[in-house]
Image (cartoon, rainbow, N blue to C red):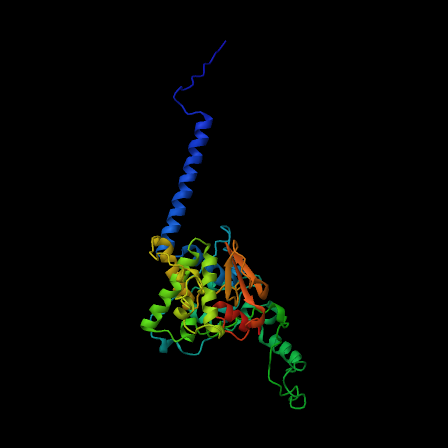
Length: 372
């Protein structure tokens, strides 16, 4: 009777310890990935957004990829089996091209092939001839057997030429069948819904807010700093789209005609009146030291891209007012609520209309132009 003993390693990890170690490794991988993405975001390297933009721009190319692969597979010629073992002998002339440009003799022995032979087999059978001359022979020799002979081909063409009438030609101007030019019948027309249409042109990009406000040089740097201050001190703890929305409100006010037509004038309007200004940070009397470097870098990037016309939040649209959800101003009843991001609700006064005459920038303007 055979017996076998199982020795267990007392120092081996238990199942619970192995699961815990695997989970800890997964958490470390996610933490390293999050730190990497955060570092790229601080360095203004938006890899995830760039990948998403690349997929969005090349959506049609990716959709056509299966068709391209299928057509490539269908165009691949099948090589003969080992039993057939067909081969091709190609003779490349070394003379000058001018010497080759001579009347190509049609040798019946070199061109004539069997009815069930392929062009490759025909070239293989004509080893003593020039491969270039054989390949340049009329393709009638490589088509159906019943059309290879010249008399039969002439009879078929003559029988069909009497029935061919161009759709765009005048029936009175068509010559008689005796002198009608030889024309081969065309294949069936392709339906229009199957014809791939070219992609529409992107159009001319609309002017950016900086171009509309004529911001250049020092004026541009000053406006960008004022807008970054508003984003940082008003919404640095809000989501990214909430910070973009605050920047868009400032731009909308500059274009509305009801506020100053420059960025710094909008941000610091009535700043000399304590707690009675347009943006609370400008007149609350608190210190304006910048302690969060990451948030400050993000605010500057959002301000720059907004002035360049690269950021436009369609949900915010032409909003010109916002407030925190923990306060209830008396002017809310006169406003149309547009959207909420984080702790801020964004509004536009009913009396000011929808703002269709006010400018829209970036990709949103291109999309609106295409819809029109």
